[in-house]
Length: 556
Image (spheres, helix red, strand yellow):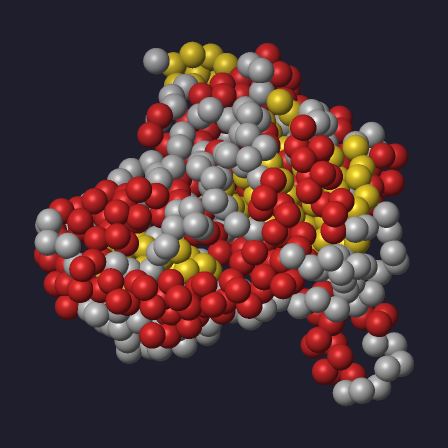
């Protein structure tokens, strides 16, 4: 039924109807809409930069399995688009709102105005301009459909008016409708074709050394129990992409760790020996396959994916199961029936477990090291020991992702691991968004100092909005992942080398205190666990600044 309302009233009511509790933005955009949002109890979080706003909305979406929302005026639209790259690469349903000047201002050197809509083409699934307020019901509904269905991703609506104000203030007879199935992910759960399930079951039955490679799609689908059940049925090791890390607890005998270029070497070793690789809700990009060498192209592969264009993309001839991970695995298990394959493959599972145990033993001296400066391996081990049930770990990219992905162990129920899809600096603001989506769960961000510098100002945002996360900084005053490459480029010439990767030594605990947060400085290994324990007990934003060894490099 149509009702007369302003664009602001429509947008605010629609956003609320889709279950969005926080919007992250930089002034000035949709000001009347923000007033209407306040009436509906939506938190309007002003950030210190558009990329930070996009990252917060991204963390909110990934932690909550529901759409996140970020906004910027016309001059900030380019920065906001840059911030959507990680959401796009990480398959995250972020909705972005921007404003643009009206047609008579275009192509005439208008102040602060460029044609920014094309910037969103590369980082969104859906990118449209709202010309008149009457378009809102059609375009808003479609934005949420696009963002949450298939392989999720960002959607962008560009409103009329530099601040979106011409859409915001206009009135019309509009129908307000919310499609409940698109308020969460997965929005729909398609089941693979029976003939494809039979082919996959037959291939798995014949394989002597099958391995599962599980990605974020399985996490989104909630396929945790189904993955573990199938792995036990097959006697198959569970290898993960970095963002599939929390699919089963890491003390399970079948867990083999993350594979690829950001890897636990044991996972790559197991993957290299497998004779059939089953990708479950995982892309087959260069990172997880070690540049398509694990498995080599031409190897037997099964892919279960909700996106039809992913099947066979990197492995032509793969057996394709088009569908949702949870229902797809349940259907495959039914097709396999009660004849357990695990008995004949026990030897394979035991061998894979032995490879994992050997690797863990090899890093144990560093995980228990009392060296000063602190080894990152020891930092990760002590974080693991203190993480409570249900904790969310948010890791930045680069070495932060590798250290956290391989050495922060998730042994307790309900723990979740989120990591940057490639944008340095994503982790801290994303952790703030994650906490907004899951306020009752502990959120721990693991970041290097190089990444933390990107959005240090958002610590003030956390204090102002009482977003009580724990941020652990692996502070070695260098861009650790860049060191070795820069040294190779200098070929032994020392002049200027450290200028390329070294930062000023900074005590981030002091900085945190000046911004109104709690700061804890850690310089000895024995101080790590008490510091993490104290940080988790406080109902405030906390920065745990850990002075670590700058010459430490991951075991890959």
